[in-house]
Amino acid sequence: MARSLASNALTIFIVLLICLASIVAWGNREFTREGPLEQAICLMVPSGGSMSAVSANLEELGAIENATIFRLGAEYTERADRLKAGSFVVPAGASMDEIVTSVTASGRSTCGTEINYRIGVAKADMIVRELDPATQKYVELANFSPSEEAAPDGFDAIVAQPSTRYRITLAEGVTSWQVVEELKQADFLTGDVAAVPAEGSLAPDSYEVSRGASRAAILEDMARRQSAILADLWAARADGLPLETPEQALTLASIVEKETGVAEERPLVASVFINRLNQGMRLQTDPTVIYGITEGQGPLGRGLRQSELRRATPYNTYVIQGLPPTPIANPGREAIFAALNPEPSEYLFFVADGTGGHAFAATLSEHNRNVQRWRQIEAERANQ
Image 1 (tube, rainbow, N blue to C red):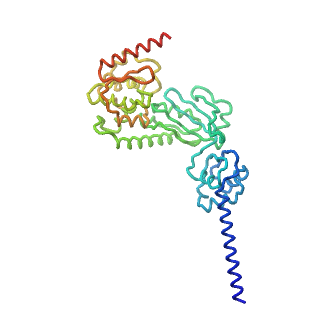
Image 2: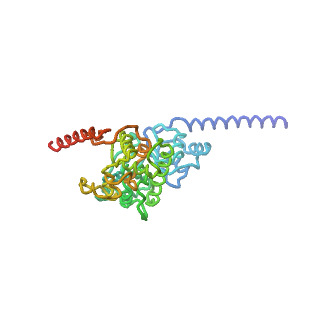
Image 3: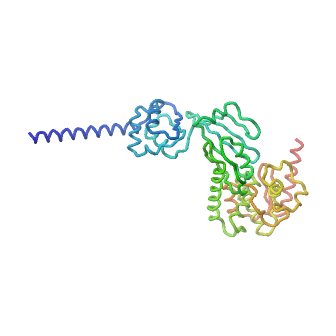
């Protein structure tokens, strides 16, 4: 009798194991197979949200068929406690496993409404855009300059939405004063700025920020990023440069940044200034003179006068030898790289060529011919 009971118990146990294995296998297939979603959606995960709430929301949206399997799958794969807040694209046909990865991986929002505050050299603008999950393309909802015009209707409502994301983008060549002044115009930020950061110390880049973030903290982040970039590139600089410190490299990079808007020209523009420094020639670059006049507080808005080119200031490179005492703007990574890795050349001069780029020359006579061609182009344009 006892032997029969033991045998039956063992049989039942084996059957239960087989059933359990079958259930686990079925659950795994459900967790990894293509999902029912026919069109991509944007999934909002609030701060402090739970995997249970997300699973229920996904089931309601039709992105998954079983919230329990989704939640158990997240727990089984040890990702349930890694849920990130944000807005995430859930593609059509996404499996539960793929959705869990989306909401637990980087935490970087991939959809929803975004306010991008772009700080440029000439002006700053606020761009409101929204990603269409179906097409994966952004649709622009508004574009305005906070310092020059009022926000459009509906902007306050967008700002009030908890799911709205914020980004600040710095263009290469903006000055630290411009950055601080424009950050003051961003109502979604908080706090005062005690002092304008050192010129050149802020990294032109795109920064994802939160509503209510501290202006001072954002500037500190920009400074940390620029410091790291400069340290990395200084360590990998070319040999034999007439630059004694990373700060001098930053100053030269800022001049390169202001002298050309053509990315491919940066190494060649840098080589002109490196060659001049090596030969003891004055740099003779207009952007430094302009900075000495404006102190980085906005564009000059007119051409330089001859008296200004002759006036002795610490930034007038027509008068002083070598580099000015500080950078004249915040250079980007590529300009810093160019200053530290200039293209080998014998060029000592360059002038605009009418295409947006420059004509380079190794001798003064060749440069004078390039200048004459540029003057002809200017005259022809004036007569059109």
